[in-house]
Image (cartoon, rainbow, N blue to C red; front, side):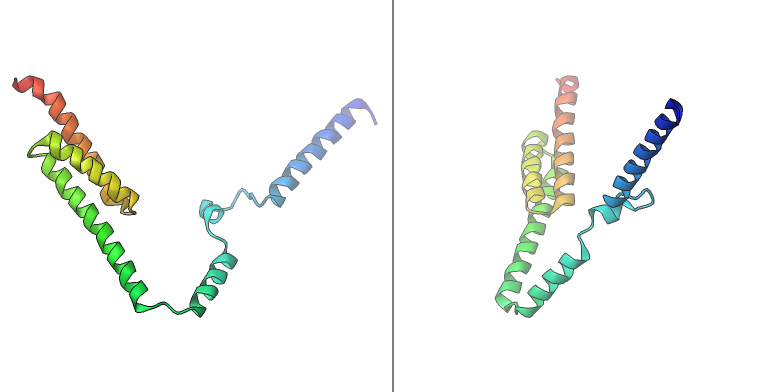
Length: 135
């Protein structure tokens, strides 16, 4: 065996080791991205079985419905304030829309919160960009 054959053999071994490591780690080239970030099925079924054995009271359901409704209400109020800031008092209502949008975003209403923040920023930025032309 000469030097060229041994270097080729080492390269083949390295390639095999890398492909083996790639296969053992579960990272296949044809694998979908969603499968990599999905929750394992065994955990879902275990959590479902443990939660299905205990009963949920009507009070807990009512509290959950109230919390979800309150979160949506904050999101819609933030969106209304941000939309109003485009037409009336852009600085005051724009900053209020931004703050309420962040609160709605943190409370879990991500889409309404994001729209409120963006519209509030647009209103405030447009005011400060256009005010020199009117004075």
